[in-house]
Image 1: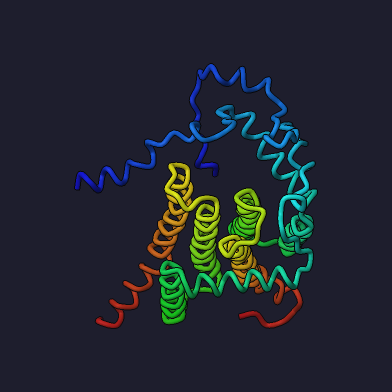
Image 2 (image 1 turned 120 degrees about the horizontal axis):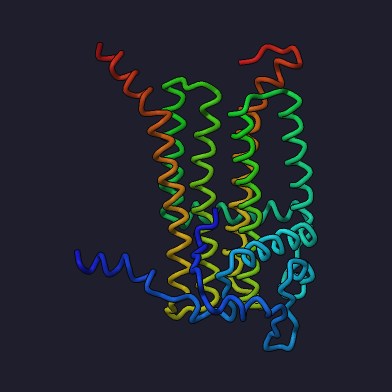
Length: 146
Length: 173
């Protein structure tokens, strides 16, 4: 039992500042870094721009179909999940490139599996999009819904 | 949202830190710490492979998915859970709308498990020796997976459990 508690608390005893060249405890700075990361994604990653357009179009479609607030919330959550997966994928990619500039099997695993996370996010968002927007869209088109 | 944020008010370092807006790398490269600084960095210069084809991106993502299905115990567990939840959902005939919640909950598990595996690979790549920061990276990434599992359990309790009890009581009664 004591060993298990020791195991559970071992990580929080590590001070990350000992190993970081720069630490920010300032909330305003943390926010600025987050915006900087976002700007980086918009400028350097084509997919993020496509994602931005797709997100706006889905929200416009949802508003045009006048879906209720709960369904709108579901769409917002699933769109956010895809954004987060995409950003975390880029972060993992950066960490892998930082670790080595040479070709390495674990670099491939890291990058491919992070990309798989984005793919899963996209699949989940398509399913949720069809479930949430499908019935009102069919109704609007005058087709029999489920 | 940002779970890593640990405010320590009244820290003397803050003021000194705020004045710093440029860092110099050991290679002599300048790092602009302003909001517009990050997007000036060209990632292509720091990677051995660059890929601009969307079809290839999809291929790599599928390759990653096959890797986790073949190698990761937790992903195999997640696939079993996914199949069980889908079968339960079909048996209980839950409304279309609730499928969206189940998809979100299951999707979050898969995504965090994949990112956890990816971060683990990146850390193992960075160093094969034990290191405190490697421990933090791996433990915190798996904490994210734990959070999504807890959320999944809550959603299952909210959506599936009442219907299971209903169905079982109507079967016995």
